[in-house]
Image 1: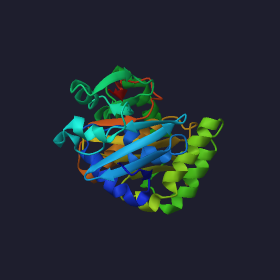
Image 2 (image 1 turned 135 degrees about the horizontal axis):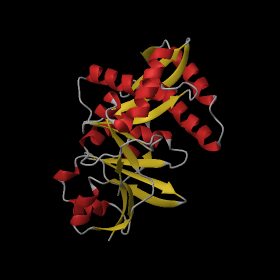
Image 3 (image 1 turned 30 degrees about the vertical axis):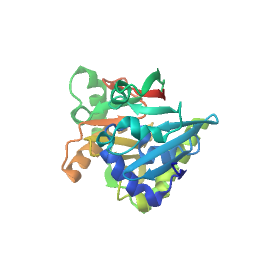
Amino acid sequence: MLNFEPLAIDKMPRYQQLYNQSDGQSLANSFYYMWMNSKQQPCEWAFEDDICWIRTSINNKIYYKAPVGNISKYNIKELLKKLPPKSELIDIPETLAPELIKNGYFHLHEVPTEQEISFSVQDLEELPGDAYHVKRQHLKYFLWAYEYKQDEIRPKYIPDIKRMIKKQIDSPEKKENYNQICKILDNWKIFKDYLEGRVFVIKKQVQSVIIGEKTSKNYMLIHVEAENPRIKGLVAATQKFYLEKFNTIKQANFGKIFIPASRYNLPRNIVSKYKLQLE
């Protein structure tokens, strides 16, 4: 029997190691996403050998996520017998779902409405072609109009980051988003060794923040992105210089950047997440 317990920061490094070995990765299954959203969707995990199992409660119903780790070395049917019969699995990445379906142990239950959006890192750095014309113009204006400093997240910036985001709260959803971001910032002393965070400072005040995570599958996951909406071109500048700096630090090409939802009318890839049911 699997022994589940609440997510805890002290076991986060162990989970990160298994997550980076996963055959399919999803933003929704990353530690930081689950940690930030624990109030709306509480998760528990159970470690057994080199696999982590995750279960969550939605509207008082228990769901499971795909086992996290290198499951390709296991017999999937035998592995999943650890779950109760008729269990439902959610947030299954589209790269992993076919492997689970084809062995006959699952049937496709539904495709959830929530999806992840991926962008090409190279596109967001270079902004090529007509599709990025408006964003290029916004970036050009920003570079002409503003004197700025970009820097890594430091303790001295955290109160200013919170103030910047708090000013934009005009709905319950934005208030909850603010609370989620604060969970990351309040633990930044621990998370800074696993995440990369940058700020843009204009007139001695933080005007944008972006926090991401590099995975071993050549992806970068964006967990936090917020900016002063009154500053034209700041979104494009924040993304462009963040990605360039991230590449310089890590000496890596990240391929794709994943975010929970798109605020931009730009070319992007819809990454479906499946909901499956044990037969």
